[in-house]
Length: 413
Image 1 (cartoon, rainbow, N blue to C red):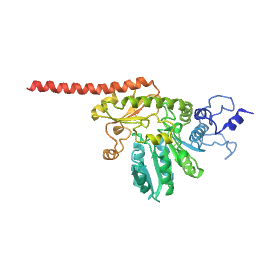
Image 2 (cartoon, rainbow, N blue to C red; image 1 turned 120 degrees about the horizontal axis):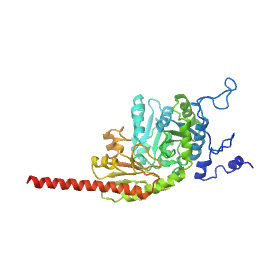
Image 3 (tube, helix red, strand yellow; image 1 turned 180 degrees about the vertical axis):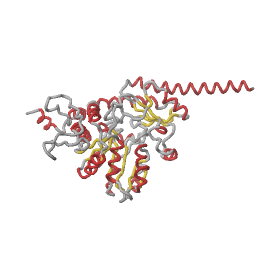
């Protein structure tokens, strides 16, 4: 029995970590190269007009991109996948495929700023109605979904407050009115969560984040279970041309091979960070699904195999203190994005979620003192110490400020 035949025999039985390395990634057939080559080409020789070997132009298809799409689909447990030049390009393809003037889309109250912007600044003006609802309220969710609703769009865990939604419950509400359920699985990744098993029709990823995993590529992906749902998205991938380069696809294929290892480390570090921050006198709230008092803890235990690698917290202080804290860390680098091997932190109100108006942020509970952490793959002790040192610096600065005021007061007397 050949190696290919043995692999086919075991298809569907292998564990996630093995699948991430082997699925859709056989050695290259001509030379036996263990790692597949990068097909860095824009076009392909044809034997005659219209007589190609399955590839004719790299906007339409490319062997390296095809490998990536196959792997991503298999990791999510479905057949159909399309890679895009960014996460927002992937989102746009879904929205453009399914929304027309007069249609409705239902989204959560805690949502990525780029998603909020494209819905309210691009699709809202052409007549699409955007409804924001607290998905934790089952009755409100059912009421929000009507026969005009084409898409129900769920992040879980959400960005940036790590709210965990009951995907199965929301799927029932969407399907009862004939709507499609879209799940943004960026934060959980297919390693910790399988949305299609919970009723999702479409899964979207910012591949830039955990799937790529090394902060060196911008990419997105859309995965679908049914061909009929996938076809209009696949059409737009070619028709609008927002496709990733072969090099970016190759980098992501490389990154996926260590996805299981990285996610295990990210979660371990997130647990350490969350526990260190919880109860600190300068921390008002810690958001992490792994904490037993997190509102979505029980749902996460039910529908996820782990709690993810993201932590957010509210500093019990001023905006000035937040700015100083995030700008002066040693191992947490101040930057947008997340999910890389190097730890990152950001201030959502002025960075990733700045496109959401201040009053809208306040309405949904997104505090201006919220700090989002993406613990990388460093040693957890160093990451914890980095944060605790920053909080100590805030405390020392306050003490000096109070001391200075007292001296001035004495001098005035």
